[in-house]
Image 1 (cartoon, rainbow, N blue to C red):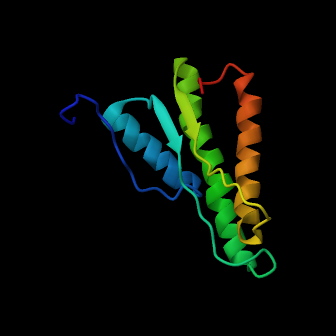
Image 2: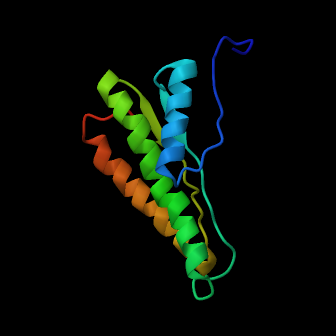
Length: 129
């Protein structure tokens, strides 16, 4: 516990892998109990335009930017739902440019999917946002 009396925990986790996420959930619960808040703030962006990116780099970004957010939200969110309280926060950059930057197209697409999923969930009886 820090001097302010707030207890927090930071963990390393491969958020694109279900077993790593489950391990993180178990670690959190063993040390702190069911998480009150999950902040999905991981992101991966590879350099280069959409016309240049290789399939492996594309898949790595999707694994972090989409699959990782889903797995963390699912694994932590299930426990929050069962308890009846909790909060999920998904960080996404908000870039405003006068022209389309194709180097960020794939990252922007992933963020758009999560913004839309957040809107869908707000109507459900899920953890507060």
